[in-house]
Length: 234
Length: 234
DNA sequence: CGTGCTTTTGAATAGTATCAAGGCCGGTGG
DNA sequence: CCACCGGCCTTGATACTATTCAAAAGCACG
Image 1 (cartoon, each protein chain N blue to C red):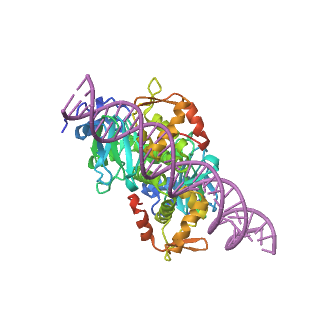
Image 2: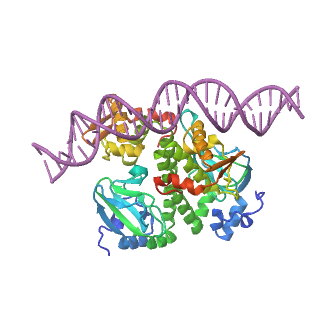
């Protein structure tokens, strides 16, 4: 079973929720968890399949998607190191969303039966999980409003800032995640054509830059300014 | 302090989270909580004001709203008996949403400092709260998708079914909540004019009925059928 | 160096918001 | 009790935004 090294106590992902457990429980989880690398584009879990446990992202990037009418795909969340996938649910519940790796991503899986014990015995763990969900709910509600009330231009800008918020920028202001124009459209809930059209003027004005697949936010403050009329942003 | 009777242990709201606490804690909360009735239309809390604690709806109906650009109001959630308002947050955090009573509503308030103690000492309470947020997050993500990908007609239908889902129907299939056409528009993220336009054909086809301020869903299954093409619904 | 996918751009169309006007209550004050 | 007022609802006309369909250009990969 314990084929997954390194163990939790030596794991470099400091913000992992497992770290909130007592040392003996960390060891127990470490022993029973299952860790593996998902290749870029690979599914972590699919919509409408049973929930058997919780996924903890050790290192990487994941998109959480929901498929609608005519196969229209909506990205409902982005998640990075230390984030959780798959909400808490009983074995007989089904995922309402699917999750896919955006790059090669290492993910740990913990089964429901073990989780139930962990919950009972580790106050910090369940407390931080409760706070996590509470915050994600707040973010989701704000995102709902954005998608519902913004025009395409503002939705694209908000989506770019959301990516920055989740994954950050490297030194040259480039988004750390590689998302295609199509995926930015799925995040903003618009067509890929429209996403392209909305980004063109932003490039001309020098607010963003394309370098191959990299997107740089050269002036994130300017972008924030444009959509600040919608109220609180991320 | 203990001016708010009846006390929690005799409260008829059986699904209240406080009921998950140990008897001595129920008594302690009962003693320190603050209960009052909010008149129809009255604010429970406003956007961008500090979070001092958690609100538990004892009896009534509440809308959770977020104000956007040009004062555009978006209803992000509806809540009824036993539901929670105001997420968990520290004192220095601010509400990202506001809450308003849809009818005369009795609500109990518990302060952050007491909550912190309650969390630590009552496993069932914090566990059920964690599960609650987890489920609300899932619902919110589904609603995000709806608002983002549906057309106006389907959004109105989904909104009517959402109201039914939260508050239910009485014997004559009338929604238990009285929401104006304008508010249905705010729920569906469309203009009141468009909401009216979309409901007109539904009335003609006999799928819904207006009786004064009451809206009856005479054939909820038909409504579900229309939007089932978008996948899982509530 | 094709082949297939993504991106970009264009043109036509469809869907929705906006503006405007009239009708319908419900509440208020004479 | 009735007339008036203001807000909400409904409907129409118009303008605009975004989608759809189409085609060409760019790019990655075998």
